[in-house]
Image (cartoon, rainbow, N blue to C red; front, top):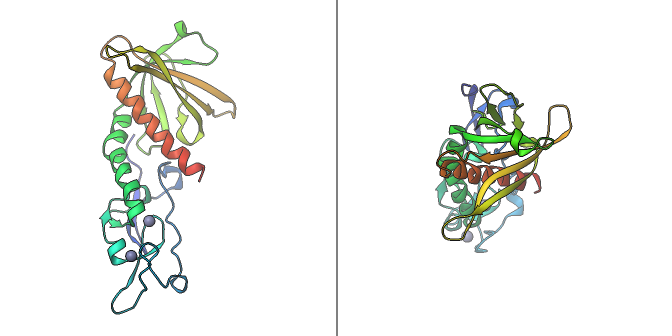
Length: 229
Ligand SMILES: [Zn+2]
Ligand SMILES: [Zn+2]
């Protein structure tokens, strides 16, 4: 699947590259926050310094929309969840959150899109009926795709995932529990609730599958946290 068509848009915070169609909007996207209005901020919301047009001007954090002095809001970092092309101003609280997410966008998202092999079974099947699928996240991040040689499985919509559970598969040499797979509960295309289990293919090296599972956990947490705010 090729990347979706995108267009440039300038908002008050900077240039954004957004999909032409809403159907291609990534589930990891967050809306831009409303800015605290000028007449409501007379002082920095962090250090309480009073604003003065000439000496101490106000700036808005692009992530939370609150109002700060330059000292408390001068660092610019990437904010891919709001689709900005360039790094934007962040307050000291938000910068920590965005820095952690940068890891997701630079590493984990690629892992999910590169995909991996898993033994897949639906809730009504026994484990011996599992089939091998190549699982990967679609280019617009909205669907988990199942590519199989013979069997078919409908894509799982990321936004329709209700819960994600790690399935342990025993201990490693150092006694740590290792992830053997994940169970995802989601609403399917007919509106029913389905649980699909994806187990790391035991045939070869388990590491890539486990890295993929960890990335999937991060993706789900991001969508889930935005949903419950
Ligand atoms: Zn300040
Ligand atoms: Zn902020």
